[in-house]
Length: 410
Image (cartoon, rainbow, N blue to C red; front, top):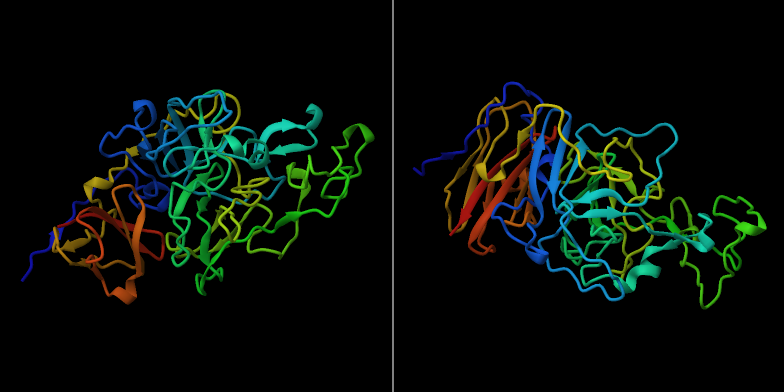
């Protein structure tokens, strides 16, 4: 009989709720091996700390993939030493929605900043017709579709194509970041139906170009004063040059005016509001690209605005250690056996009043390489198609409880 190798339980009696590892804690690309990125700066996320209410993401804003050059952009990427604060209990903003501002509006799962759809410049500096960053700055993007700001902050306005496999059209895209209202951001593909069923399809924006030849009104019908007019639509200034050239057409795509929807996802089997990056059928970015033009939820202070992104926890926090193989529950530990393995692993869960839903395997970069329904697998997973190395397993229950552990494939 094969002996079970039980994973250690991290006992955190002070934080009953914080003992539950949920996706906002586990979805980050932690730098576990002190890897260096651009200009020998430590790459990806350096540390994840969490309490019952918040998660703190410490990062350099330098990704693990190669970046640059940035043709025509005089700026250079530099260590930002950020600590972003993400709420664990995001809520819809039922009042006036918050516009996504200039600068960072969220953080990708590798600690790189997310910027909105604008390049922060407007026609005649009137703050009426804002330039579309893809059109005005796209020529300065590197192969990963990012570039640095004047302060050295490397960021993506659009789909971060090097962060995940955006050509995988047969699996639900992974969580690739979090907005500063605490809701997750997924890649471009998801189940067609919001109940988690149906084919995997590309999430389509519900924004479209307006049918205008002159820029004298806004999409909501507001008639502008003559001194607020934008340039005439022309070959030199085609539709799409400005973000005000787009209008929301409800039902024309899968997503709402915030570029998201409420749905069941692999990481949130009970459902969550989630944003999606939007691309067209050829994989090119489509407005509003990530979030926006306003947030769906309530935005915490400390992440947006000048000099933001340097939060210091004022509460007791715990450092997340995925390499520790932690099963976060007082009911008992998850077991994985045999471990190491050459082909198949079996999972044993303690008796809990919860229903396991999904099993996810991530490689050392945090990328999902395999996912199955727990019921379909019956707790047994084949690793024959994977190369030798270290993998991280997550068993996600219906409530959001996550059992996690480390696997060695020989």
